[in-house]
Length: 311
Ligand SMILES: NC(=O)c1ccc[n+]([C@@H]2O[C@H](COP(=O)([O-])OP(=O)(O)OC[C@H]3O[C@@H](n4cnc5c(N)ncnc54)[C@H](O)[C@@H]3O)[C@@H](O)[C@H]2O)c1
Image (cartoon, rainbow, N blue to C red; front, side, top):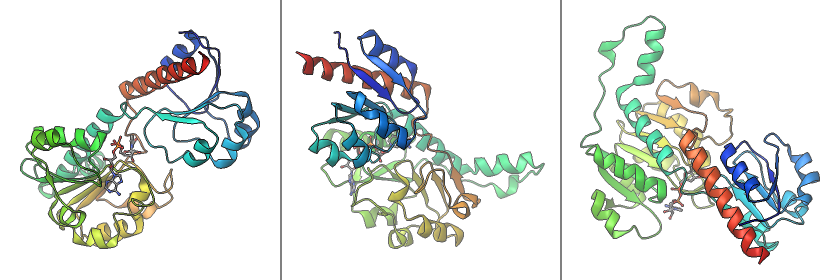
């Protein structure tokens, strides 16, 4: 399948996708650090624009993209792309939703264990020369309740692995949850309040929309058990960070693991400095396997769509 389109890659992506596009006959300009102004001045020359989460495909950029046929997101979340503006201009927006499923799920499981056993605190104290063994009585995951907010691709996979660790799975979603999956993990479907009140671990897996923005607010956090933990690998704005800070600081909940933040890198230093918070710099899909897969999947989708448009 040969197609001769010009592709602008605006964020760092695995090289395998670039070579796949080039082998298909496409001209690829790799500009992983391009800034907004430069993007607006250059974007008119390309049929395909490839981004990750750094580049903001605003209304203004999309208006300038007069030859664009595809905006391709090497990853999952589309909240950095003005989808309505793209739709109006007839530009296809595609993503690689399948690529992050395992990487993010494994990070969530790692964080649950790290929170339950105080691993990051133990490490920090040992490096300072302290042996705090008697302070580190953790809990086990076996038998605990994991509440999934959003039972989509990633949420389902987290549930599967957690079931393998003998956890009980609670799920809240706005769409029906597949019956086979419910049977597979023994999922108990709940409303959001019941999930907050019953879960020992809450893990967020919803997209950022007007409905999910700050869905974990002060009221919901107040319903959680003082021994419960929150894990957020979805989008920072899904949680009200100030309300979370208050809950954690006042020991109303036991801890949190955050991979995503309202502003990235985060400016809310008070939250990330808390000893019962584990922070990672949005690394959910930062694995070799996930990056390769996302890059390959996007390249293949782009080639297929551009080929279909050319015949
Ligand atoms: N940390 C990272 O690096 C990283 C990597 C990949 C994805 N993500 C994020 O993970 C999240 C989930 O990704 P996914 O691939 O599982 O998405 P998905 O679309 O497969 O699943 C999302 C689920 O959320 C549900 N949902 C939507 N609105 C809801 C609401 N108001 N209340 C309850 N449920 C609602 C949907 O019905 C769907 O089942 C997204 O926010 C994505 O941006 C983060």
